[in-house]
Image 1 (cartoon, rainbow, N blue to C red):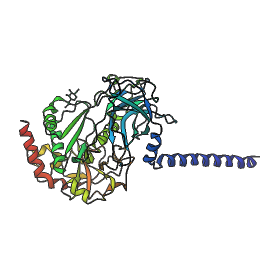
Image 2 (spheres, rainbow, N blue to C red; image 1 turned 30 degrees about the vertical axis):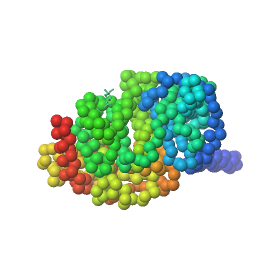
Image 3 (cartoon, protein in one colour; image 1 turned 45 degrees about the vertical axis):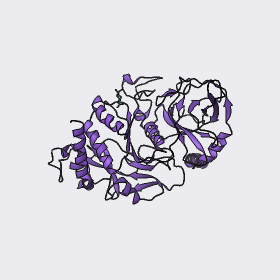
Image 4 (cartoon, helix red, strand yellow; image 1 turned 90 degrees about the vertical axis):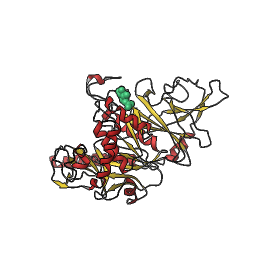
Length: 450
Ligand SMILES: *[C@@H]1O[C@H](CO)[C@@H](O)[C@H](O)[C@H]1NC(C)=O
């Protein structure tokens, strides 16, 4: 009896498993399949329709989260003109969306606003279908970060504003994001994008050390996202802004709950868990990328307690000369220099150098974290479409993709107390910059009367 029933059950089980496997493979292949963006943009252009919206001059806001739907399911923060591909110009919008968990692909539209003297309000509106890209690393929060892309006819003049709307030419737009014409030539080589400042960040001297060390390695500009910082940083940031080498982006008014405490309650349901992963850092890093696509050749992502240090190249620029030229991203593996170790090396007893872990912490863990685990990167802004925190996602243009840099060539030095102990090894490659870092640090402290 038993024997005879086992056959069909086994067949069923095998069939079920194969079916699941098939779905899994289809799902991953579909997700991974490289999309030809030009094709999508050309197709979306076909949806272009003239609207007759009234222009409200009070609507546009720069760098402020604005709603894009009545149901608090979509918010947008910034928009950028992307003219990297000579064949088509794309408007990129950085937003967050709570519908991403659903299976269906929702269609949103861009309303592009063009100057038009023939219109009573001086503006003409055109609607076009948006392509939406959910950026991974949602960490299963209620909201995920979405890059919305809309094509602009190359022959057309450049739109001045864009609104993200639900339906084409129907509901009056709830948002308008200003667009700046892209600069023709990048003015910077390296822009540093720093993760949002949090918890009333007040470690002025650490921040000075970070900025001065990065400047010596080749940084031209810093982008700081101000979720919460102490006023003690103010004078230093003012000096950097006046010198034209720092931009502070207001990141305080996130429209959804980001903190774990009840004060974080903002809109929508709040069950005590953040509604967006880690203070929207995925949105911030992609916002930073798009601010830089026509401004800087490269974007460097590192935190305030990190520094990308070459093994023997004497700057980031010479480091890149040692690496494959067509990579979109150079992934720098992370290594921890424990702060709880005694100071070592030639600067160990210098009273000022003691404030700079990069100079006095010369023992590192012999464990170098693998690709994707805490790694940071330098990306070519012409070749990336979406960034993650430790790796990149989509590329654009002709590129060989990601290149994981060998630890002997460069690493992301991480100055912190480790969660896990590994053996320590002496490693003083950062000391090749030691005297320069120390003298610049000293000068800056004098300038700030510290
Ligand atoms: C950062 O945000 C704080 C808190 O709102 C604000 O007081 C401060 O002026 C901002 N700092 C900078 C440099 O923009």
